[in-house]
Length: 589
Image (tube, rainbow, N blue to C red; front, side, top):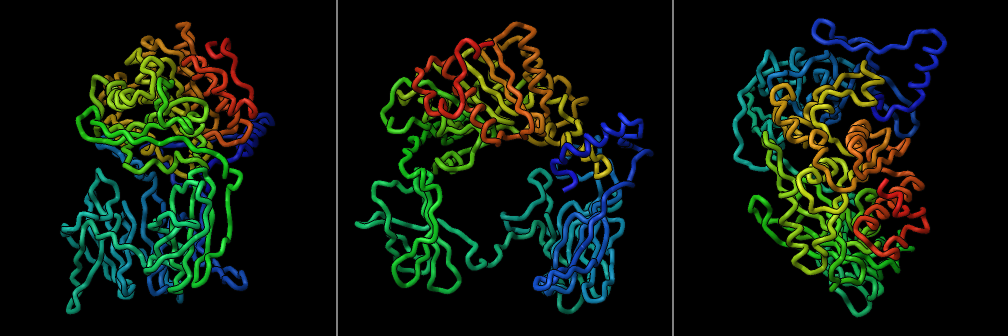
């Protein structure tokens, strides 16, 4: 919590110290200057759920706990002993600044035992079913090995992992191919340890009343007929004119009572309790949405740029199933592959505050949600995002619903990076909106970020920012100094002279995507006298969420798109009452 969006108060306190002539400084070190001191400590508490009385059991830099199945022991992960990531290997986004060490605590006696003091755990430990042993994968003396500890006898055993035939193993990360935890087992005659790596992912037993699953249903004369999970059917009253998006059921654990959650396409949802008699309505949410007509979701099956078959989705204005020649807004997020089920987060009533296809469709646009397979590492010559978008765009245009001469892009986060790259690669697009993006892959690698900058003593997770560029969405494969040309070829800021399309660039001061990146892209366009706007929202993070800011956000985006795609004024009427539309003259400033 110390690193999670620290408030402005610490910053103001440090400014006040400097103004008063007292010390305000943070210190970070590397090599022999690496520091371990100054980190906040946590307490492990035993709390009586009835009285609220609390007893402190242990204190330390704890990051995680796991209770043994019999409730007698607690396995604690201590995040201590600062370490630096290797410069010779790709780092993972989960590589920690601090080593992760295992501490076992006997809840009855309070006794503590560290089974492998020199081991750092890349994943999580795993208790045996009888709580007698705990297995884990450990990094020790430059080697990675499977370890199992006998809790009562304080005996530690090592074993070479045996590859499991199971394909659904629990791996720490796909590129590392190592287990989150070793499945430990001991033979009855002796204590020879054996492990299954990766371990099979067994599903925990369902807890009554907590597990929702899709239910089969059909329209009936007086409502909806829902099939019971345990057999039989339930008739639920429902207005026939109100289209249903999904039906879910949950067995309440009694064998008789079933909870039903019905979601309408409009965004309204209702919760029912069904027993032996007539289902009883417990709660209705978003009833104000009852009369809202959702956008039309149309499946597009097509080959991707690499030839693989994929599914994209075309979203059309409400009631426009046979629309023709609409302006098209493409919302890409490279690496996202859609299924043949319409995206749930793009339905009416979902809390998707960014790149909301329903709001764009309600304003008169066709919206394309393309599936875009991506390579693991981008080429030295630069990945062609424009070409990657082309197959889905051609499939959308082929329906006749979209005007091929009026196409715009809107990308958020990694999607913003991709649309900025497409803007320098093609003149096909009439407008580009980029929100919360990164536009210089090398410049963001290694930056601290706001939280880490304020509290470096809590851990310099330098690996995370490098990992995004090397091994995450940046897909560079190596550090910037190993392949500077690859970073430059795949960073739109170095090709800003090729941008010939109006750009709306949006950022926020509390975003973990550095606001400076958007400022840098805007400044590059500004220096060349190109059409661009930079919008900064204060006090917002990666996604705009405050109501007034959100209304302004969509008014500006829809106004910008309407201006550049020549959409009639009626298209922005949906948001005009919430915030003033952007005049055509100012949209190009």
